[in-house]
Amino acid sequence: MSNAPLPVVQSIPHGGLSVPDEVADCLAISDVTIYNECDLWVDQLFDFDHPDLLALRPQGQTAATLGKADLSIARVLIDGNRPPDSLDNPDGVVKTQTSYGDPIYRAPIDREMQIRLRDLYWQPFHDEVDTLLHANAGRTLLFLDCHNMAQRGPDAYLDPGKVRPSICIANFGNEDGEAVGNRPSSAPAWFARAAARIARPLFADLPLLEPNPEPTPVVALNQPYAGGYILQKYVDENYQQRLQSEHRYVGLMVELNRGLFVGNQRTDTPVRPPNEERIAAVRLRLYRWLTAIVALLEEQHAQGDIWHERGDV
Image 1: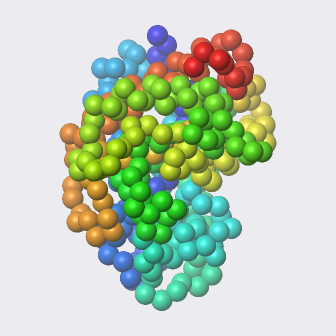
Image 2: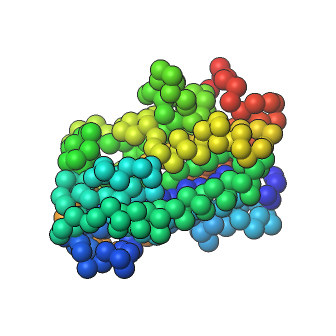
């Protein structure tokens, strides 16, 4: 086995809890809200360089993946997974309401401040993603957008109160990973289905901390999320052509259910320290999942185009 890093670039846009100094005195929300709006502990879940995993890595491998970009600012304030021109959207790049519909600021911030926040915090994160992909052009096979989600849909979302799977894998397709209409997929359907098939037994034995009374899927493709701005932007064919690489990589967005390691959160769930035991259990499963799907990509890449559809998965 090669001791080179896995050919993966990671994006972690929603794991931050920090508040920009520019608006620290203007907030109508508390630390409790910031905590419950965050993709909690996502940086730890997708930390494939964690000491717990060293024994599973090839001897001599100095890094698990090619690199990752991580936005430290709280998601409830600056959203790295929104387009830069979404300033009029309360759930846009600079948010003005929470995912439960509550106002974020005591008084509305003006457009000048919105632009300032976007340029100071959103832009450097995207510059980092872009730099990583350029630096690893020709080596990247998978762009992995790393997230987690509340156990049930928040009030202001399209699935309020609905049960969510333990893990959602997204490629902008339908529930079978197939393309929807004319919208480009971020990964071929064969790969999305294989990713779901590999994830299912890995996560089937890990129950929610607060089980739902309804049946809860272990894995779902593109439900409740099919992908976001980051996946669309950086897997786009035109963007990849500008990298001047000999091959195109694929992209997946992964959403882990926070019920696996936090509980059934609501907007007022008390702040708690990370559940290290559960985080370690999820991280191990994610690493095994990642190495398995990368092996499939490497096999397909050796035979030709990884975007070529296969009938065996």
